[in-house]
Image (cartoon, rainbow, N blue to C red; front, side):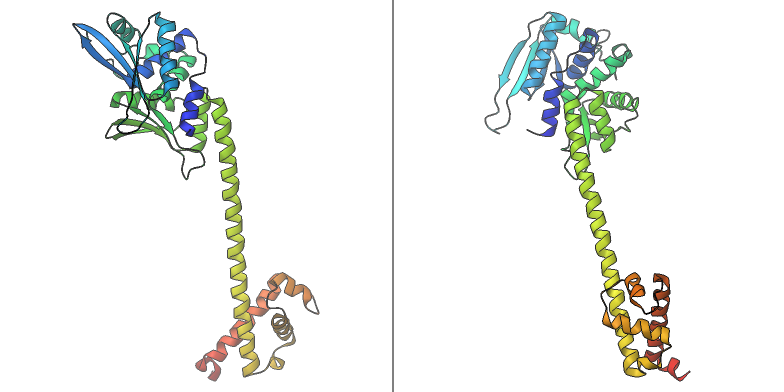
Length: 315
């Protein structure tokens, strides 16, 4: 089972008050519902491939409106996909419910966006987002490369309304158009965690944060290892260059021609090409600091450079 499926399964077990049931149902029907005409009356079908969401939607309709929806199961044998569950209501119940859910306005006009009457209370706003995620939401596994949560809706005005609702909680949501509709989405891991908390998916939130912590820890360790490796490579390359330059000085003029401080560093570097500058300074007859060792080695590099440059040597 995917992480998104586990989140949705948890959300179907969240208990809610009557006002919250209305808000949650409105979001589910708005995204997954199809309105049809039956002999002059209005019918409604709510479709989902998740049996837990189908049971939850059926229970909410039955509990709030005291109706007995018809439930159909359609098998997709040809493509070997999940079953499709259809909760069907006919007239007159469908029309009354659609008006109560603030989906149908006067006549058969669709109410655009999210009706403010549905989300006056804080609990109802959370419930509406919960219903929207149940109906059209998806979220990446937290262990994947990037974080991404989205809610798919058919209409642009509804997607914009979801964005406003999400951003009322400072979740940095945006929307975009896709072939199948419009998507409100969140890209930041911490904001996705906040969203899961808002809609009541607390167990999924704990799992999400545990994986994020482990992932961040692994990334931090990898960064440290890469940094240490890079520093070690630089140290080795610098030591190899220093040894090469000292060997050149030894061949060309002899180390005994160097000032005593430079000769001491040169001889010690030849004996211990693998040690750091700090360790090198501590091993000298008269201990010196890392910066002093670095200064003397630079002097040796300059002398070797002049030996390579005939013009400098002649000068």
